[in-house]
Length: 312
Length: 315
Image 1 (cartoon, rainbow over the protein chains, first blue to last red):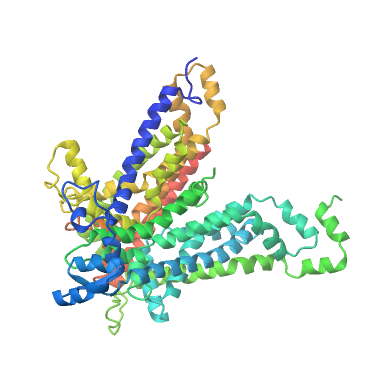
Image 2: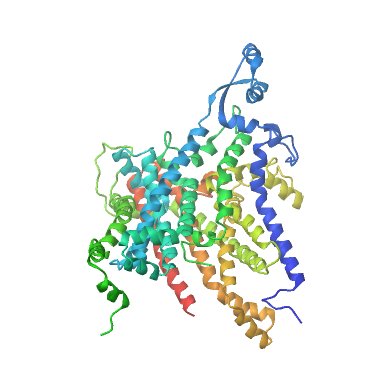
């Protein structure tokens, strides 16, 4: 019997497998290259031809996390008496550590703003999504479309008036300002996604709970929330990833105290020119959490990226 | 009279329960639940939008707060539409949009089609392919400048290895003719999985009975592909194009990190151009008018497109 579309023949499966696997390998190379470059010495990182095999070093990570300055022979010799492993890496280059770099701070800003805005988005978004799913809200479709349309604006276009507004409210370059801004941007995604998830919970559960004497609020948090837990969790991760990756608002509205990692990482430079191993080390630390989340999310990925328009 | 069972039960419920139920009407709960969201969106989206529209009719400059603000009517709009630089920017954006969408649709669909052959381990490889699109475009875009370095860059080395060209002889970012392609390649690398995932959902939604019926009619596989697979996937594909189209029209982070709009202004997409006008030249009124024009363009194109999409869906 000849093969059909539903049940591909063994050979066509093989061909498909080989093609997809080669694309996957090709597409993952830049990411592996980031990780590898983080463990290279500066000369290995800029070697020609590009080095696939090299002696791994933590110099990039040390350079990422410290500020350094050049030192004289005498200072170096005095310092090398009782040096730690990371100090010895720096001393070998004729420099001493002058303090921690800004990377830690910027990374923490990303964590604070990411988690803060995600928490706020989820509280507001779940409530709004529940109302849109269960009640007759006047102008429901218009409101839902309005919420979605806020996502169509180029961020730079919105940034001009937001910059002015934040400046007059004293919110420029503050954690609170960025949390409110990312919450507003993420609300469209979370309301649309969560409405889809809540729509899927049969309304009979709540009716039963109401008959049993629950109030609406109790029915909401004792019946609906547990049922929607997976949906809420995956929506939260999508919001977190957005806030984590966001660059345009961050670069325009933050410069110091509240600057997140994405605008900071590209500005990392060494003593002489761009320090690629340090940049790669910073990128690796920053990207790995998202890669882990992506693997965890893979079943809900499609729904998240299409605002719930495509469900599987 | 037929009454709903809930009402019957509600009437039979003892007094305290009924009173608790009456506590807050569904209507007021609905408002309490929706109001904070709407309020925040009004404050952070709609109020600024109105202010942008208002500013677009003035000559306001943020860096000169003491200057008198004059009402200039439509002159900002006139200037923008007659500015040859803006049309160059639009052309760069159109080039970027056309090629990224074309490549992502072709490669994304092909990948989805192959993955749908359900070979062993296809789920794991799909997850690997999806990784780039979840990462921070600014951070990744910055690293692509390293891959694109002449001589030492991995991309140049690979191209040299395959074609025999000298990897030091060309610079993807520095060359006026190559830079527009450098951003197309990086964007395609990053976002092809997006189109692929949506196509995959489309392919998996096709009922097998359609193919079984075609098989009974002895339709060739080629024929089945064009008369069943393509029409059934088309709405999904169009949705993917809508999302990518809007996103790439707004494109900022990846490209600004890769080329910064250069060399010259050959890769200066609208968002980068707008950023320059608003936050480097500080022409606030002018750039507000620019922002309004962009918003109307996206909104208009998207609405026309959605109408077309709905027509395809109904077929």
